[in-house]
Amino acid sequence: MGIRSTLLGVFSESPFKTIHDHMQASIASARLLNDLFQAVLDAQWDQARELQREISRLESVADQLQKQANQRLHRELFLPVSRYDVLSLVKSQDAIANQAEDIAGITVGRQLIFPDGLHCEIRSFVASAVSVCEAAGKIVSRQELAMQSGFQGPCMEDITQMAASIHDLEHENDEQQVRLRHLLMVEESKLPPIDVMFMYKIFERIGNLADSAQHISEKFTLMLACS
Image 1 (cartoon, rainbow, N blue to C red):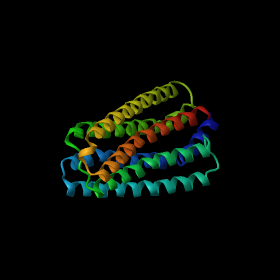
Image 2 (cartoon, rainbow, N blue to C red; image 1 turned 30 degrees about the vertical axis):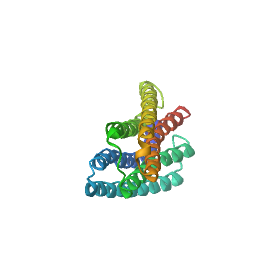
Image 3 (cartoon, rainbow, N blue to C red; image 1 turned 30 degrees about the horizontal axis):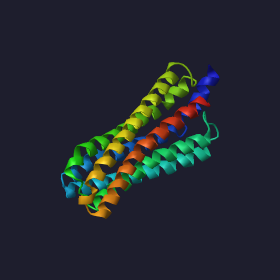
Image 4 (tube, one colour; image 1 turned 90 degrees about the vertical axis):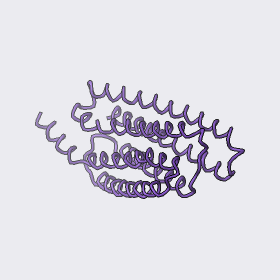
């Protein structure tokens, strides 16, 4: 029991607190996309630009936390999981913040005017992608409990169930993207061609948010299963 306590003490000083903070910053940047798209669809461009700046600020915070986590990972002598797997996990987390910044930058920078008939679907699509990111954040927050349980028991069963739920949420997001593309295709002949191209790109990037969140879930569960 003394050895176990000593090991847990070592792990508690590991980079996992920074990794958790990094994930939360990344999710916070994605979460603001809900408000940003509401402002965009209402043509409230001053508010949209303010939200874009805040998303960029959070992306910078995430970048700094990623650097801190990577530095600590390279210095740590003892880790309860594969160093390579943790580095890969952090990279996927950072993709969420990067994609959120890109989505905001393109949408606001070009002042894209989406057809009225797409507004409801767009709001739902963005909210869906954000919900997948939030679900991935919850699963990552279980890392301390997983270590304390010795990577077994009810905690690991809960994580497996959460991962399955994230897979379902991401699949729903994929289906929403298909519907949005079809709706846009119907309207695209009435819109400036370059704007249409960027709208398709925005839909793809929003879908990539959900993809990145699912990858985080998969990498996290695989990392724990191999420990």
